[in-house]
Image (cartoon, rainbow, N blue to C red; front, side):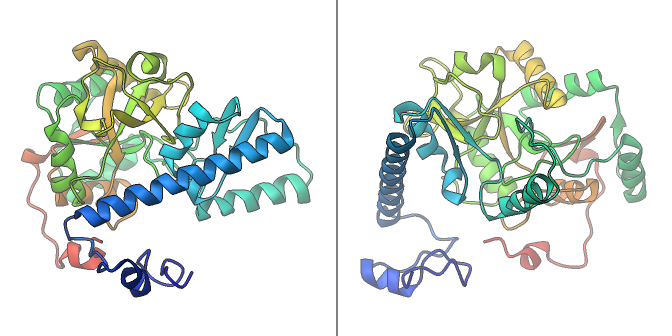
Length: 349
């Protein structure tokens, strides 16, 4: 632990680590050089080897067919994909907030089941447990800001959003229903774009998320069409599995250099608006896949309220904002005046 700083600071490693490898600590705004590419790849590889050893050992000792994992390493989608493909267990389940934040759920379930003696639930169906806002609450906020918007029926909103994503190649802020719980946006508080357009990868990274250009995005896909586009035989509702993109499927904005992708499968039962948007985009384009990344900029948490979403929309180069059944276009909005530099206040690193 003397080589690491994450338990007391904001960096993963410290100067001892840098001295040991003879290479200075990288600042977050610095470009990655070959040393850092090699170091990242090596640590990932060793992590995968260690996890597979542990999984195989656990299976030898238990003979069980189902594996549940928690902890921050359980959010490593690449190693999870290898467990599915190469490991001895038939089924893998990872709780969507598997890092330290998941302790809150564990504590609540311990009290509910063990202390109070209530029966256990058999299945966690989704993680949309946060607050939600009605169309009336959203329109009240927008009116208070003097923000121009259009209110459509649900079906019109779906069709109009799909049109913007397809015809206009818009980057869309998408705000629907109850907020996701966990580190990944899963179609309730998301930034969406066309996965077929390779330029959207750099555009969303540099002009909306304000983060390094190498960071990948996840594809969201209709669950019933996932196996047509990806080499996968199971659902991945929490964006926790990496698999290969099928040969001949052109979605470069979400395809890693090795031909893989970290996907989210979407069902109508758990996220109806998002599923119907993917279905409408598929009807228009023949592609049931969209870029799905968290609705925030680097250094900020995922947006929670209509106000958070509107400010994020106005501070970045997003083109369209969809709040419930209300649609806002950037070129129609009044200029945002703030009495502070939000980038300094939120320290984007």
